[in-house]
Image (cartoon, rainbow, N blue to C red; front, side, top):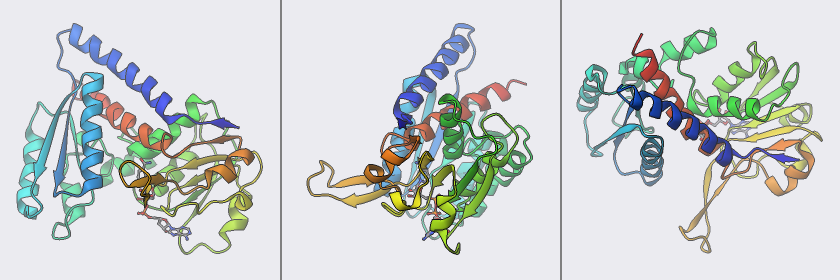
Length: 292
Ligand code: NAD
């Protein structure tokens, strides 16, 4: 069994990105600039956004954190989005989700200029991705594809099952795995909350991508020996012994499943760090594309 080390792989990716930034700097060119907008004070969202901003510093990007109060109106947020669209200094930006209930998320995502949509959530990018055209691929599925590539995992003709059909993970990774390509060409089953007899389906799969957010949902009885197991789940579970009072737990019962798997991602340290690295990669791409 080989652990798919997202921490190490994301570090390598960041070093590659930092080297590209150094070249831009040497050439006297503008370095990539990522902005992140956060509305409100949700603890988990603040943690995610600050780790994204910190990652920008690590690779030599410029970054701007736009912190707006919880009671920001939809109109004010849309004005901020317009401002970021028009600001030539900003190559890409993200609006951290979830937004407060009084703001229509869809309206906000649709207002983002697709050329700056480094999260890849705008329908223009999603559609282009599905059609195998140049786009921004959402960071989490992009990170999973990078892990498969960098560990040279054979996906050709394999049966992959994706559990969870969210627009940001399950649906896009099911599309990417089924596309043409050396680290794709899989036959994909997309499972969700209405799927019947999931265990039988997962047992048939050579590749399991779990993105549902239920701790230890995937156990050893469900996994075929030799399967590749990608755990996207991130759930905070209270733990009085942990320094922060909680632990991060994945969807896969790692201790049980790891001995049966050929490759497996740990949680934490698997898909999570890859997500941040791919956001940086998308920002670098946005910077490069803004030149042509
Ligand atoms: P979501 O929370 O929007 O939806 C969950 C999905 O799971 C739904 O499509 C639902 O149909 C499916 N589901 C629920 N119960 C099911 C069941 N019993 N059987 C089969 N399918 C079932 O999905 P999301 O936003 O993709 O998040 C999923 C998990 O991934 C969460 O834990 C989230 O925190 C995590 N996540 C991690 C990263 C990362 O960087 N590692 C990024 C995004 C999301």
